[in-house]
Image (cartoon, rainbow, N blue to C red; front, side, top):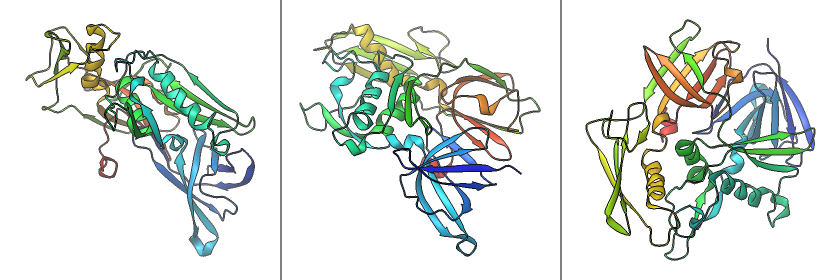
Amino acid sequence: MRVYNAEFFRPDYSFITARQFSEMEYSFDYVSPDSNSFLCETVEGVSSGDWIQITGGERPIYGIVDHIDEGAEDKKLSEVFINQMTALFRVPILFDTDLQPGSGSGSSVTLEEMIADFVRKLYGNNEDALQNIRGLTVRTTSATPEWGFNLKSTYEGMHHLIINFWESILARALVKYQVIINAEPDFAAKTMTVTIGKSGAPTKVIEADLPNVVEKSIIVGRSESAVNKAVIYNGANYGEHINYYLHPGGTYDTNNTNRITPVIFEVKDVDMSESTRTFAQAAASAAVEVFGGAQINNNITLTVLPDDEMVNPAGMEIGQMVQVISDGISYTSIMTGYSFGELATVVFGTVRTELTKII
């Protein structure tokens, strides 16, 4: 029987208590964050917002205590509910729309550095000292210079709006640019490392029809009504435009060959009045808004044994690109979740099919 060890800490890394338990089904979902729970002996002195580290499974688990229910088995057990560590970033922020390249401000900040700056403002050098996380290190591992989320100012001419950091920036950064954020505490060293960037792991090829795969599900998210052609006009000269075409497999470019049909098109224009970029650069950014993430617009789940050496579910990274081959077709996707229990499930793609998650 497997034994898990749960250690509880204050956000200043001070140790509170520890408990052992034997049963847990843990799931992690980057696209639609999960809450998990487990039963253990009654926990005292732990509050909502405290941190937790769970060891003994295939992966170390870090999280934030959501709440604790007492009373199971004549109040001898507690059910501890925890959120993913990424819940730190499900907070409102004041966003400057001029940060987006092509906004007219001449901004050249990369997507990763923009995210890093907000993390530092939230938890590194916040004017409220009690909000700051001790020992915080924020690092970027990639650079995406051309990005944008078409965020507009709430009030005309003010170039600011209040948004949810996770929903409006971080979740969309994965979908459109494959950029992820990870927060990992080191309780012994009393540090927190936040890493922002694309996965550096090599693309993994998985044969989904082999007998080691206990169960599989492949759902392609693109529908017949999805846009497969984008016409981008120069807002300073409407006689100039660039067409982008979507190809099978989710790639897109200006090549009018091997296209998806029937043609479903979208027309956009780009404001070049104050832009420091060329029209071709601005059009490329607009095309990302239309087609970004088309390759990973699917939902692929594969269930294997936790110690399976071919899929290696414990060794894969969130954000790692994959090629899943099934029935002779190769699907491009990205790892966005996993779960471990008696079996292990790896989840790829950005489409979610469970009703509760869609809602």
